Amino acid sequence: MSPITIPTPATGTAESIPPSRKALVALSLSILLSSLGTSSANVALPTLAQAFSASFQDVQWVLLAYLLAITTLIVGAGRLGDMIGRRRLLLSGIALFTIASILCGTAPTLGILIAARAAQGAGAAIMMALAMASVADIVPKAKTGSAMGLLGTMSAVGTALGPSLGGILIATAGWPAIFLVNVPVGVTAILLIRRHLPDDHKERSEPHPGFDGTGTLLLAATLAAYALAMTMGKGRFGPLNLGLLAAALAGLGLFVLAEAKTRSPLLRLSMLRNAALSSGLAMSAIISAVIMTTLVVGPFYLSHALGLDAAGVGLVLSAGPVVSALTGIPAGRITDRFGARSATIIGLTGMAAGACLLATLPATYRIPGYLLPIILTTMGYALFQAANNTGIMADIHSGERGVISGMLNLSRNLGLTTGASVMGAVFAAATGADIGIASPGAVATGMRSAFAIATGLVVAALALAVIGHGTAAGRVESRDQSGRS
Image (tube, rainbow, N blue to C red; front, side, top):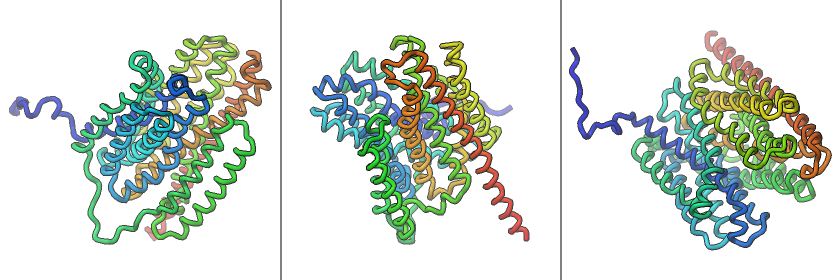
């Protein structure tokens, strides 16, 4: 009979939790903070306009500064983490986010608040890029899908929790509370990471290759120009939008030239020849644009076509984030069991069915006809996200995990930004009139058109999943045959 071990005070329940699980909790808190930083600020914009006696266009920069900082810095943050150590930079990013949250909550002017939000976004870029990249340092490869599912769940929880939490905090403690609430969570994440996340930085005898400052600045300027082109004018492209798009194209060309010449590029362009990686990034951008269609079109359809009040719209819209939060971890387990490719195809098939039903069912079955396809679409998205992230990150060399994670998050952000602009414009054009005065039938027509196009986008992503995997498998087989010969 084996001896019975009685826990001592030094080995209680807290110590019985494996260090890797505590480290994963810390990474999850990082993702939660970065998603809360976006969703909780949205609900505060009217209050901020009143508090600072500013126009709505001015207070929009509270949100834009955060999103632009993430978009422009996330790839550079991932690369820097690969160079100096992901744990070290992740701790700095959480500290920056936490300090910036304090500055946001105590900002005396709108200008200082916007500057602090940009700093908060820089910290969020580091957290988003390096939390995902650090998973392989603490989780066995066979459990990567479950870990990615957990991170996806925390992102969904932050998105769903932000508006309600922000509204409660503003009503009870004032707008500074939506920023100051981040501080204890940030401190907790720092303490957990310092104690439980292994140090991935190894001293090297050879000279360090150096950081590609030129490439980083060119990419940041290019992405900023593109993001502004997509967000300014609310989808109506004027001369300024076209000029920003032209600047983004020129910046992209300069970036490619710079990366081809430098000895230590921010992004090795040869990596994009990897069919699995390039198709995975493309799918991430496409599917994010489809998800943004539900967020942009859904509120207008529910209020203008179905006649729901604000509370009803909010209740129906909460179904998507709630389902995503509940299905993230199971989606990760499905990915671990059946493989990233199979799970990706299943998830995309579910999304295609959901988008197709969104174009047809709501007109007949109203709210139930809207909820069922949204639930199906969201479940498919949770599975796709866990599987695609796992498939991309699984076989990446340790020295490139940060930059690839940054690119994956960047593709998602660009998809969301593009989807908000382009799919919003498609919806408005199909409606045929100003949405504020359009008839319920016209809004329903816009809804059908937007989700018909969204269905086509998901089908295109499904084709990429099949073609990308087939090309990658062919290359592996050819390498194996050449090795045997």
